[in-house]
Every structure is written in structure tokens, then in C-alpha cells.
Image (cartoon, rainbow, N blue to C red):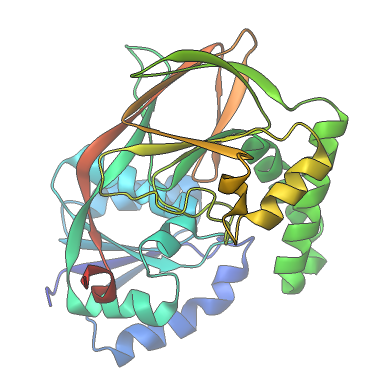
Amino acid sequence: MPEQIAVIYNPSARVGRALGKKKKVENRLNAKNISYDLYVTESESHLIEIAGRLTDEYEIIIGAGGDTTINLIAREILRAKKRNKLGIISQGSTNDFARGMGVHKLKDACNAIAHGQSHPIDVGMIRLGKNEEPYLFLAQASLGLGVAVNRYVDGWMKRHTFVRKFHAIAQTTSGLAAIYNSFKNKAVPMNLQLQNSKETRTIDSSLLIFNNTSYFAGRFQPSPFASPTDGKLDCCIFNSVTFSNLVRTALQIKSMKHLEENKVEILQDNYFKIFSSQPFEFQLDGEIFRSESEIEVSIIPGALDIMINPEMLKP
């Protein structure tokens, strides 16, 4: 196992609940005889500064936090172009990327780090214009309800800190409220032009997801076969136009009946373009950005080396 390992720990992940898990993470790493240097972040800008600096000092950088934490570290690794290996210790609310990599549980994450095995994965990319720096994502990008729920739940949890110990229930309840309000206020469905390598078409979708892994919003797998190693993105088009229809579709996802009944259409490609007559927001691994009219969504094959659970490599 290589010696040069840095752990970047974000205590603010999961609305601050990650702070209370720090000692448990340290104990597990020590139990696996993993030699590492720990860096605890104080803010998002501090996290970015640390990650950028450590790419020169460490072969392996471990992110301990949620999807946004991991994504921010990944961007600095990619910007440095030194092929640092990225490890993941889940401390967030949904941990979609960690679930897709088979390292959502702490024991699996530490096993991956201890074994030292890595695997190149694809990275998603969104461009707003030719002269602007692209936005990168690991798990997924989304429009519509993906943005509305993220914004509403994050704000609600910060205002109601007393519910942190009931995090899962509070997250689900506030998420449903966000979805209901979005339909009630006619924020969704969105009318969009969707283009890929085969066609350009008009869609009315309440939720549009570009999946690089199979998970979305924690435990949902709307595109169960999406993979970060196939050189493609799975575009999931949710056709539900009412709150009740969407809830029914969500309940069908576990059994994959949402695919049988054509409630969710999946297009697989390495390039998409979204046009809208109105400005819109999009979400990347927990971060929200804005476009005035269009975005290009594509994939960078094998761009990032990820510390992977050895079990994931078995045939």
C-alpha cells in the first residue's frame, strides 16, 4: 500500500453531522493500518485550496464528505493533471457516487484504501459556452426537480437544525414538500429541446437526469445499468406531469416497473445538448448553477483514477 495518503475531512457534510463521525473514521483507518495525514476543512474555499495544494504532495487523496465534497476534490485533481488517485469515505446525505463505486459503507471504503487498487472512470462535463471553463461531475447532473429538491431541502435543514438527529425522515419529508410545491407553482414540467447524436426533439419533463452512475437521491436507481466506465451517460427523462404520477413512478423504481411502463425514458449517448427559451438552473453532484439558454453535456472517458472496492472488480 502506498505511503503518501492524505485524508481531506469535511466536518460540514450532512448538515454538520459529519463532525460527529470523525473519530469513528479515524479509528477505522487506524485499525486497517493505513498511514495517512488528516486535513480538516473550515469552508468550501478552504477545501478547494487544500485539495489543489495536496495534488503536488500526495499520490492518493481521500475525500471524506458528501457528493459535493468528492466532486470538488476531483476537480482539483483533474485540474492538476497529475493522475492522483481519489478515494471516498461517505459522510454526506445521499452519497450517490460512493454507492455507485461500492464504497458507501465505511468498512468497504477503508478496504478499498487499504488494498490500494484503483480504476479509471469517466467524468461528466457541462459547457455553457466555448470560452468558459467547463463544469465537471462524477455521479450525475440534473434539471427540474433535481434542482428544486436540492435547494429546498438544503435550506430547510439549515433553518431547522433541531431535526438533524432525524435526518433521513426530515430529508424525505422536505423533499416531498419541494416536489409538491414545484408542481403546484408550475415550475415543472419543463419544456426543453433535447439533442443527442441521433436526433433533436422537444420534451416536457419534470426531472431530467444525466447519470454517470446508477444512483440518484440516495437509494433510487432510475437508470440501474448506468456505469462510469462505459464512456457514455444515461439520460433519464421523467415524463410525469403531476405530483401523484411522479410519486407513483418513484415507488416503481425499486422493482424497475418504471421502465416497463415507460414512465422514465432512458437515452444513452456520449453527448447531449439542452436548449430552453427561458433561463434555467442545473445541479451537479449537489451544486447548483445557471444557464441563460443552453448547455452541452458530454463525457471524458477514463479521466480519473478512483480507489475501488476490490469486490467491484470480481467477475
